[in-house]
Image (cartoon, rainbow over all chains, first blue to last red; front, side, top):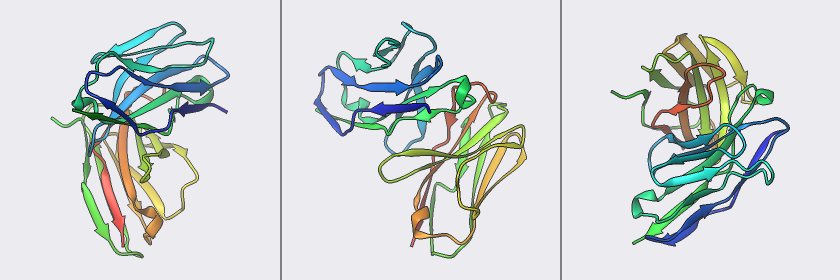
Length: 113
Length: 113
C-alpha cells in the first residue's frame, strides 16, 4: 500500500541555517504530494504541494520538488527563522487511496536564535 | 472568521465518562474528517463524512461515534473513556471527497485521568 517516510526528528538548527527535511514515498500510481506544518498549539495547515513529477511547490521560502525517479519530496529552506519552529508533515494522496491523505510521522524542527 | 472551529479546546475527564467534541466549518465544504494525534505527533484518521454520509471508518473502537447533523458540522462522541484515549483530536474539512487540500481546526486536547 501507499506510505510516506520522513526523517526522524527533532531537527535542531541555528537561525539562518539551511534546512532539509527528507520525505520519501511509496505509491503505485501518480500521487499528489504535500507538506503540512503544525505550529505549537495549533492545527495543521497546508504549506505547499505538487501534483505531478518535476513540479516544485513553494511557500514562505520553503520549497519541495516532486522527484518521481527517487520517489522523494524533500522540504528545503535556505535560511530558517525561529518562527519556523514547528512540526512538519509530509503526505500523499492518490486515486488508489480514494484521495485519503496518507501521512508521514512528522518531523519536529527546532530553530535556536 | 474561523474556518474550522472545535469546542472545547481542552477536556479533562475521568475514566469511564462520556464526552463530546463539536466541530463546525464555515467554508462551505462537503467533506469533514476526524483525526487523532498521539503524544509523538503521529496523525491517524478516524472518520470522514461526505455530505453527511460516512465514508471512512478506520479501525476505531465502537466507543467512538461520529455524528453529522448537517454538512457544516461533524461531532465526535466518546463513550466510556479510557486512559489511552488521551490525545489531541483534530477536525478537518475539504471542498469535496476528491479535493486533497484539508483545512484543520485548532484541536481538542483530551486528557483522561
